[in-house]
Structure formats: C-alpha cells, structure tokens
Image (tube, rainbow, N blue to C red; front, side, top):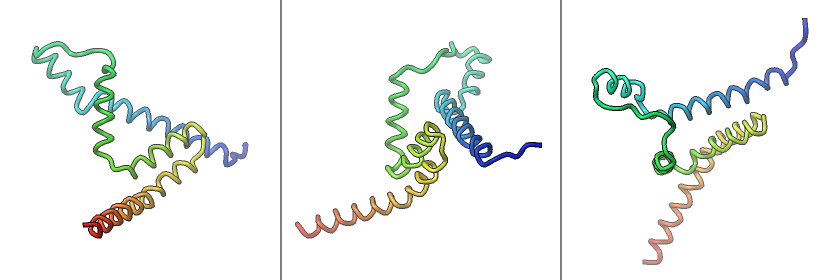
Length: 122
C-alpha cells in the first residue's frame, strides 16, 4: 500500500480546473438551449441546422457581450484560473478569487474620488 503525497492530491486540481474551463467553453460555444433549438428545427421541419464551429464574428460578438456585462473585478478569477491551469498551481486561482473584493473596493473608491473632484471643480 503506497503513501500518497500532497502532489498526488494537488495534481487533480489543475485537471479539474481544465475540465471546468472546457465545459464552460462548450456551453458558450453552443449557446443557451442549443440542443432544444436543433431538435425543434429538425423535428418541426423549420430549416437547416448550422453545423461546425461559430464564425469568428460570432465569437467576437459573444466576448464583447460578456465583457460588457461583467464588471472589471470579475475578470480577476478568470485570469487566476488561466494562470493556475497553465502553471499547475492553485495559488493563482485563490489569489484571483481574493482579488475580487479588493478590486471592487478600489473601483468604488476611484469612482467616489472622481465624483468628489467633479463636484469641486464645478
């Protein structure tokens, strides 16, 4: 019976993060309710179902939509997850998650300073 070290347990986390990233990419790629939409089109005779990956214009549009919807501080865990998967470490993921409230506070303080300085100059 062998002894499993910390590296054996920690080696599963990056793989799990990579699987989660692939799952999110597949969901974004197909769009919401893509299977139901395809079934309706095929069974109801409503038209041809598109095949293949989406065009680069569709991907760019989706990324612009997500970027416009998310506040800047929510990109911190995304960057942490990417760096963690590439580096094989959990620390960037934790740092990215911890950065969300800090970046939110910085953004709110900056907007309060701008509002205060705009009020003083008028």
